[in-house]
Length: 297
Image (cartoon, rainbow, N blue to C red):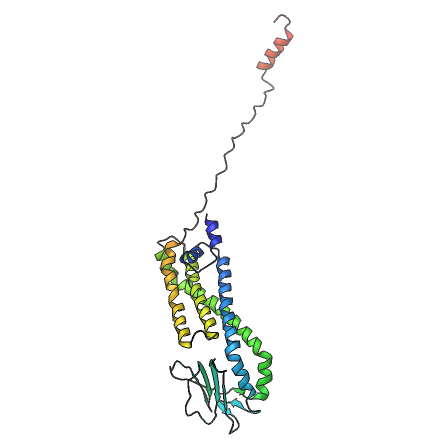
């Protein structure tokens, strides 16, 4: 019965589905986690390649032939400026470059990157203000078409692949850490129905539905069926959703299989040692001899 329950632990969508991972094998849980992490990483990479990559490519194409960030300062031609935005109807990203300083950063798109002489400003259409990031001192970075176009053209796909692998690895580590963090309340809510290992597995599996919700939100956002504020709302839901499974799934967790008692081997009867005939005892031999030798007996 326990093996059947373990085989059924394949979908972490329902309360019972998450609960079954308490008695599943570690490899089964890891396999399902890898599938979910791969789905999230694929969705993020697809969004970046669709929404941000065209803007980055266009910005590099319009850069001057010379320019660099040298020792924390942007060295560009004095009259060169750059304003690149995504296509109409899809305002995902905008890149502004104005070494003389931007008088006003208009946050009309979801992500704004504004480069000034000694800093880059990051903002969004949410209206939460601008994040100021100074250029790193002591580092020289080419910031022109001549150097960036061949470099970015040869490595853009490698950057996306590396980003996807980092997302997968980061999700697996975070789910494992959250499982360790929440396995104590899971153990308490289950009323000792699951072992400590089962509590960790259940707590780790409880975060998979939230990852799937965030994956769907990113997909709809990339297709412009969801605004940025809606994506933020989905992000908040994916943080709260695991608590629903952490509270109810331990109640429905199957009990771990009880160890089967090994049957004791039946004790074989001890063989009695055969009595050796006494060559000096002629009691039987004498009788047999007398019976056979006496013709009148």
